[in-house]
Amino acid sequence: MRLFLIIAVIIAILAIIFALQNTVPIAVTLGIWRLEISLALVLVLTLGVGVVVGLLVSVPSLMRQNWKLSHQKRHNKDLEKELNEQTQQLANQQKRIEYLENSLKFNLDYSESSESSESSDRDLNA
Image (cartoon, rainbow, N blue to C red; front, side):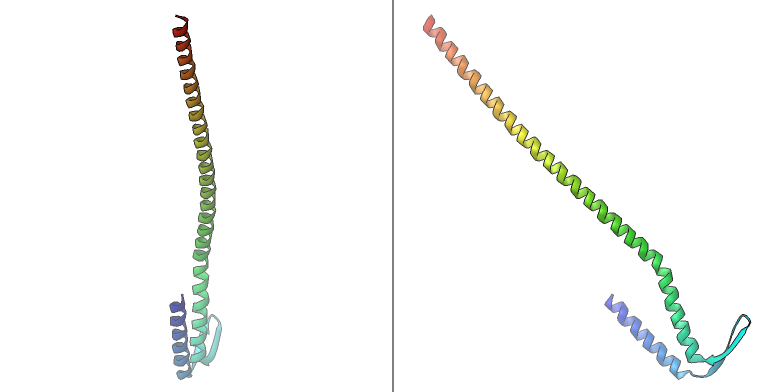
């Protein structure tokens, strides 16, 4: 951006120097009007009109880029929110799995110990 600005200033300075060296009056006809003005003024006005037209032409493109950028930022926020929700659900499911595994181990340990106590009771009764 800074390089673009430097190049634009250099071009503007060269245009002004060229215009100041060409002060010959010329006739400019626009429709029904006919004006006698200096070549320098015509060149500076032409440069100014060119800058304005260039800006007007680039505005829709800049607006489109800004719209796309804001849309992408909004989409990224939505995706981040969804990712956080999915991560939270995954953490909850992992806790549930751990709880169920611990419950299953406890039930297995309990059933094994009750089976061994029943078998020892049978051995004692026999």
